[in-house]
Image (cartoon, rainbow, N blue to C red; front, side):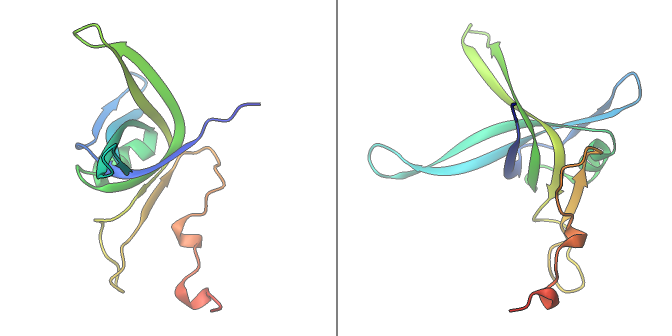
Length: 144
């Protein structure tokens, strides 16, 4: 048995690009930057950015194109693929691609009547077992 699942939280590097297949299915691509702080050899902290190319399909693609924009924070879950290619100089390069099964819009969205962020969520039609934001307990439901 094998299993391929990745979860990233990062910021969009540019506005999403929406297109349609000849069959009429919506496809949206966008890039997500994930930052990590690491110490270099001299002991100083350096920010290291890893870029992921994300592909969404159908209704999720249309929503991503409509609501996401450059700089917006997003949660992405899906399958990881690694594409190998050569640049103009003949040097081997790699691109990390995520076929998204779930996308949640984080920070920078509209605020609700209580001043909190409104987290918008999209899932593919495949069951993932994730709990939607509507099923999450409110502060009044927590017993402590």
